[in-house]
Length: 432
Image (cartoon, rainbow, N blue to C red; front, side):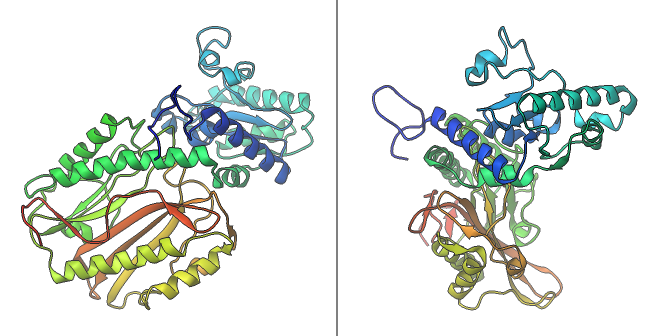
């Protein structure tokens, strides 16, 4: 971050919400044309925020039904008019969509199978409305893409004469390349989360519970302006829980001296853009040689992933280059042979802590994935977990590390600065 978090009147800052909204809509319309779609009905909470409309509360993720209809031949989408579009509702809060709050029909997806007879007429009305708008804008002969919905919505659209296809590829590809505003939001979310890692390090000590540490992190994030916390719990695994089955939610387990402590402060949102931010700490005692060794092995693979990331290469080329940097650590032993296992991956990140679109993984099976080219503006969370297996059970200690990187014209910029080169010991005075 070069500047503060929010726009001001006395200097030109990077984050420009109007420019970002325009960029995202332009990208989405380009994908409509590329995939030959007349319109896309978007139900995904993060994707309809991408199109310029937000449902204002996280519970909408679990109550799908509100959707945005992105129509070819228009400059924005048609959101459902939840409140009076002429008065004090969304049109007042979203003036860039003031004349687009025209959809009148909405059905909650999860209730349709339970109340099929009651909702059938609503699905019919929704399909008729979509067809009417597609005719009005001259795209009725083209397919309608849908990212996800209930079977009733698909059936009624098809009965109305609409060709329905998968709309996910178009929306996913639109979201893959970020502009400078989106990247600055991701950078700011990371800066907020760095403060939470600092507070976690200050609070970690023998005798504290995983739940308490999750609360310490959450308070630090909200204090600095985090918009929401996905979940809302983070990945927290201490002691024997660090050695296997990561990620997992925090529990009431009490941290003891000399244990490794894994935390992923993930899903922290600034202007909708999120984090994925693993670190591993040693609590309350000098780390053992084995703990230092497993940490160093994890760090080596993680840094190989970061430093190999860049433009003008395919995901397959990236995988092979990263393996070459790992000093023979990859591929993993053939399961279930005893040995050290790394669980690496590069997943996309943006408005979701796991954005849609293909990841640039480096695991043993990634060369079987479809090939695509890495380009500037793509953002990946480079993460790796390292765990020891003796042939019968997982070891007591495990490690996980992660940074988020944006591909640039010449390489990749790491958006996070919280240190991780050396295993940090917390919760006990003294130097090791």
